[in-house]
Image (cartoon, rainbow, N blue to C red):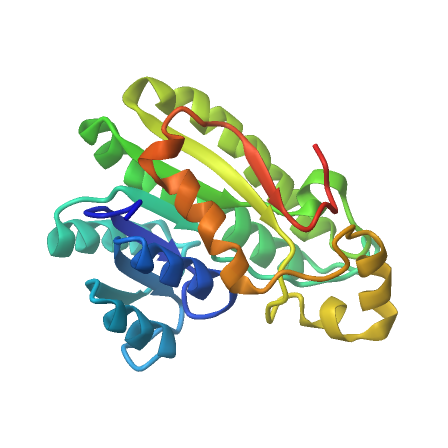
Length: 248
């Protein structure tokens, strides 16, 4: 199994892409710390991972809080003894046109999507540097790469993640730690409007050569590869998992 013996932290793990990636990692042999603002032992993703035979712990964490993120890493080390993989998936969307966006809408999205990604990366960096190994996979999006209408906050945050990843990859490479991003286009709760409302759905599908949105479990295998030893010479890269919508 590609991730046998590895320990992964997955943020935003309760549903959607986070759930799909967590299950893929468990099936690949990893033990999991599942993180979300509202996750519990009763969530379906937890039982699904238990059924794979892997160890799993859960923790309610707001990734925009440096203290809560610090505690997340401390608990992971206490329970599992190491951290090999970080999948930064936690994110929110607060759409509004530029001239209508409130300060609160801007701050919330930047704090979770960009600051939260930074907080988690910083919190695991020292451990991974000491281990001389580790894989960090962040989530950006086509919005962060190309821009999109009605989401200047989300676009700024995801564009920031894209750039942050490149700098972190250069800083951590000497320690054997890889840092990459994935840019998925999957049907999740966050993308429910564009995936189900014909007004938006048809417009987006016209831009996807494969003619459909991915399902969350289709994102997992690519993330598992980037987290595996087979990708230890790949860093600072962005993998678009979007049916050909963005071709870099």
